[in-house]
Image (cartoon, rainbow, N blue to C red; front, side, top):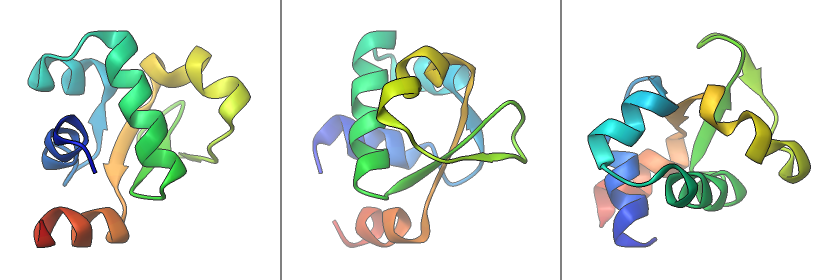
Length: 85
């Protein structure tokens, strides 16, 4: 896990919108999307769309177009890795 990914997980103990995550981490949108993609591929976070209650299965082909409208939450595995680092 990279330092930016660790910082992202730090913010995902509760469901958080892309916009709020971008403001809190101060990462540019393209870089944040790239790190979120990596975390999703590792199963360390979950994504939700169109609202914070509807989980969205990660699909590589459509994630880029939706990422800025999604909400995110650390998965159980993500929390474990975050807390053991």
